[in-house]
Amino acid sequence: MNTEPVSLKLTPRSVENGEIERIHRSYADQLAEILNTDEDIPLEFRSPPDAPPLTTESVLSYIDTWVRERNALFFFIVLEGDVVAGSISLSHIDLQASSARTGYFLATRFQGRGIGTEAFSLMLDVARKNGIKSVSGSVPEANVASRRIWAKHGAIPGAKVDEVTLSLENSI
Image 1 (cartoon, rainbow, N blue to C red):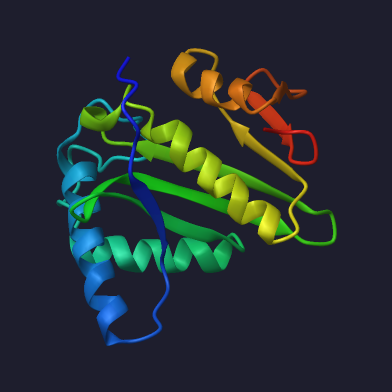
Image 2 (tube, rainbow, N blue to C red; image 1 turned 180 degrees about the vertical axis):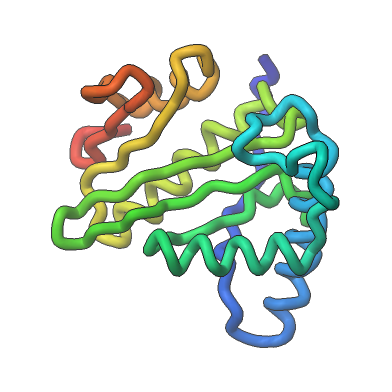
């Protein structure tokens, strides 16, 4: 595993002004390329083989609808040089319960380099700043790398086999 420091940022999807929209179009274009061509990412993330290729417009539209329907925050995982490595989100945000769910993916070529761990840490910081005290997610038992990320932060298995929960009050 590469232990070099990772320089990345989480860029939230929002439409505040023309410059931000231009940047997000570039990120969405890169995300569409990943989703259309990376056959090793989970099926639920990538474009089905018989579907037309995803476009910048379809990715942005999907993200915007998904965020609204799931009371979510969506972030592009962006490396130096404005290279998109994947995405991460907080969804089903319930401020009364101080809880949310999270999900993420990285393009295959960026896996195993600490990027997922760093993105997860940054997303937990966002959660804390938004008053979230508990984050959960669905992580298949076979996804050893993702389970390791959660475990590094103190997660515990949930009631369902593929469910993990993390208390942010006690996490790293």
